[in-house]
Length: 266
Ligand code: SF4
Image (cartoon, rainbow, N blue to C red):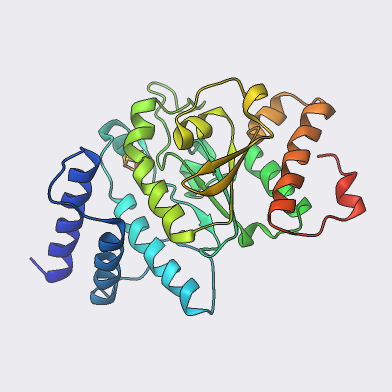
C-alpha cells in the first residue's frame, strides 16, 4: 500500500471511530486538518470535478481550498449510508468561495443537483442565486452547501425528492462541520426547517424559527425559509420576510444597504 493510501485509511478509521463515539484514541479537528494537509502534499491527484471554484490568492484562502478539496475527496467515496451511496449519481459537496464571509446551508441535493454535482442548481437554486445577487454578491463569492451530500433516495421513482432522515443527517453532518471549520464564515444562513434541525438539532415550525439570530458554535446563524417554500407560496408577504432576513444578514456583515435594496421584493 502506498503511503498516501495508508494515510487515507488511517484518516477514515479515525473519523469513523469519532463518529461512532469511540473515546480513545482522541483525534482533534486540528490533527485531522494537519494530516489532510500532509496527505494533500504527498499526493499528486488533481481536485475532483466540481471542486471549489474559488481562486483566492492569499495563502490563507489557498490553504482553505486545499483543505476543502481533501474533505471533498473523502466525501466523493463515502459509503456510510449504503442506500444513498448506491442510488446517487454523484456526491454534491458544496460550491463557492472557500474563504467566504457568508455561507448558506440547505437540506440535501435534489434530482437536478444529483445530476449536476452542484448544490442549488434547480428552480429553488435559481431563486437562491437571485437572492444572493440582490444582496450584492456574485454567487461565487458566498459558499453554498447542504447538510446531506447525497440525494435522498426515492425507491421506485426517478422523480421527486424527499427530506433526509434524522439518521442520514447525523451520519453526514461531520462533513458539513468540517466545511464550516475550514471556511469560518462570519454568518451562516440556514435555509428551511430541515437545515435548522441538522445544524441546531431544533425542531419547530418555521414561522417560529425564521428571522431570528442563533449561534452555531459561536458563528451567527440566521434562519430563513427555503427558496422551495417561496416557489410553492408566492405570497409577497412571505417573500418579503425572506428579504428582511437577508437585510439582517447584510447588517451583520456590515455591508451597506441601498434604498433600492431596502424597498426590494423578491
Ligand atoms: S449522505 Fe453523507 S454520510 Fe451518507 S453516504 Fe452520502 S456522503 Fe456519506
